Length: 554
Image (cartoon, rainbow, N blue to C red; front, top):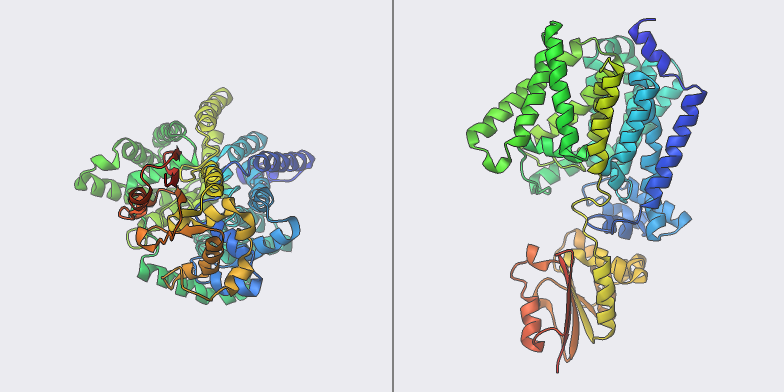
């Protein structure tokens, strides 16, 4: 049995594989489901929930003004109609979607080296902090991640089997990721890169994938024009205000994806050792490519960006380009089996392309490159499988898993829990004549925890257009006009500027400050309240970000 045949043999789904796959799905559902309300609604998640409650004919034109297709909002709309819109029940949707991805992920792990790599890959999938966070986020990224895993799995199945089930699976997975996020189209381009770059795939699959691609393009035709127009608009407006990254930002991304800098450094150092061994075996491309890329990332990790001289930054960038080109060439000519080649290309190409594209169009952030997370984990599994001496292999696994699980964070760094602060504000507000909450862009996540019935009254909000406008801009925020009015009827003013506030004859005011000074340093709200009431009679800060005050005249 040759290597290619052996890999095909261990890819089969026998009884034990089936039992393990169902078990790992159940474990993922249980663990992710147990923690799915651990983090608070924040950033764009409340927007998704708020607009998903609207009738589909109403939410479509609204969501199409944003940077994403409306498919996830539509899916969430019907999901909440069936299971309810409570915090836990709404989050079960991304929890289930990410958990379903654990099955093809485990099967890809098995293709690398049998049951040991299947178990190892499943542990990494379950223990990934970033994957855990995405499974608790009502955004389209869960579909993008799980859809990418299914797409690659079915691509490999198309190569292995003439069965039309694999073709249908690939078409469905590709259609889902194209409809869920505009960057999902990158995975379709990646498929063609793989077909043209891996010789055996090109020889056997180009006609088959061409047919599948045509079917996919027909199904996704309604959204293709939107993809072009939205990307053009976003580029023109510089909608994504993200700093253009340096090479060390790639290592930071990998640290986030692997939970720990020690896990990353162990991976890179082990890769360096393999590079030396490959050089001794006269692998003229694989050896230098592996060593150069590993040493580059180790250097970039220790040479922090704040210490970069422009010459060092430029040198690291040139070395990164050289290492990447060498790696692409080495993968193409290597003796790796197709599954391993596909996984390595799947890791390198998105990270490289998004990194380079960020020079003109900033997109190199974790949520946009999230579909490179599964192959990065599987690349570690490939490294594990290449350690031929079993005792050493399991030593590597232990030394990797310890920092990997120790570095696991259930709450992502961008998520700051505001629930306790809003609970206290509700208490202060009940004792005050008026309430103020700011800044304005926190209105949805504030309302979600302040009064759920107001938050889920979106259909009425869209019809409430009378009276003085509370939101001056004409962009996406105008759809929250009705929400602001209902909050005002409930004695809540949403503001990030003291000039917008009219207290009337109020003798007491509760103020929820969601770190307004970060975006509006001259907002003047606290000074305005201090000038009128003096020192607050109650004050408490949370997480070093949220502060709640109660002002009252003597």
